[in-house]
Image (cartoon, rainbow, N blue to C red):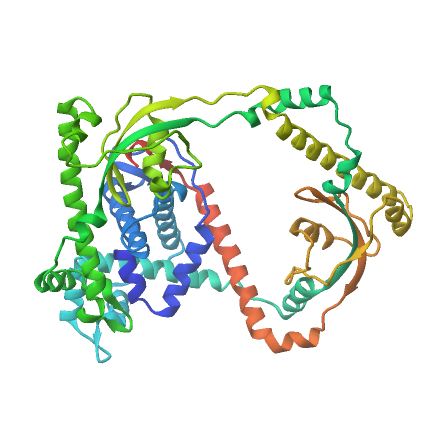
Length: 525
């Protein structure tokens, strides 16, 4: 929440500079091990990042994403984006920048911090800093003035470091012309397309070939594991329909979370956010109610001895499925990925624990399991024949394309060689590094083509896209009109400047990383 509030409060320039840090490091990895200070998740040149700092930053990040997704994160979101490592990386990056800034002699005074905070629109009334509003906004965000000011000081230091580095990123006029020429020179190629489907008739099929192919690819024909389950659910929606939120609860939540509805343009009124608050409060209460009912049911299931016996009471309907595979669950479970995944993690006869899902809570019992198995060739012969034919046709197409390319590389006429191969010569549209739209050409072929010249008209190898292969040659180069650069020179220069700034910042931080020492205690993450 601290970072979120500061982002809302900062000037556009400050937001831009912090954004540059995020862009540069969004995929920047940090090596680690299990050492470090006892109570530190990581240490950066002996400066600890405490467990409390990490947990707070992690909670704030998750809260921000929850807000973006309307209160509930999609299944697997945190793991898919490796959120724990991302949060730790950001903390490490901030420490490195802070340390590097101090080594450069860059410091931020208390007076600068006060001036920056007083200029933030979020704390102003009619353009004037309001100390009472300042304290109220921070209180609503569960922040103390001291903590917010320390965070603001860090942000200002980061901004000053970037500003200093920007002084080394001047773009010369000749660089603009050279870059424009490089990015906007347009090229056209001739090419021939060799598709696997064009060679199907040339494939020779025999029983021995099919048997060998099946033996080498039999895992591809293995059946998927299947499960059959019984389960009961406690949907949040059912609980929400029975909940009423009174006006005092809405008003109390609004006052406690006013910062959430405050931007640089002002604070939304209670009337404007009532519907959103009501949904949030209903869901919170419904989740608690669903949990209580599910937890009580789980205890009764244990006492009853089985899910089926508990269901005889009729309090909760027992739902059953036939055998199904993970990739094709029953309609009732089509969007309940957590329950489906849990079903395939359990053994036959095993009862799950309480399962929390975006829909509420569930408890399931695995009634039966069918393990994957490899069927006899005769049962899947049609599929094997089709796969063998497709595979062989693709290899024939690849071989034909490679032979044609080798022939023209050795000096044979391109047009004659392509015609002899039974294919047709096609001509591409113009494309460039800045505009790679060329109709039907795959991106890999365009990348290879951009390195071709009249003196070196052929690539070193064919281009591949799915089951198709391309043989191509340089056709024509059209130089850009340098006079046109004047029309967008300012924007183009800004792009080059930003790119150079990012390179300098990245190089500087890479240097700090190499010169410093970062250790990570993964057990505390």
